[in-house]
Length: 128
Image (cartoon, rainbow, N blue to C red; front, side, top):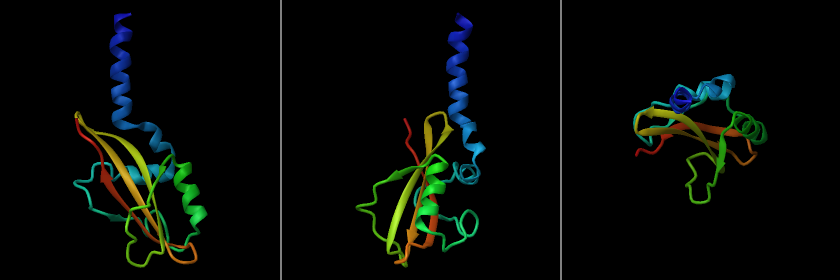
């Protein structure tokens, strides 16, 4: 019983640190490489790596939601240059270090025809 009381919390900590389930999906596997980015507002372009550009909004949205990302409210987010609308998705990417979690925010911009024109990722998170 004592062994279980020790192994279960340690196992959960290891699982939360490395989030191995993320590596099963190609999209999350691609995004996971950015989990240790330094600082906020360091947007990294995801085109042409993850997206090619010109993809339909419903296709991009389905790809990110199927990968386990959460859709976020963008009501108060300013539109980036060249975009007529945007979406933001969040991925909880495990633990960066003992006191800090890692979140990735994927910003997707579309033109007037709902075709992809912008895709970036930046890192966020919270520390104890």
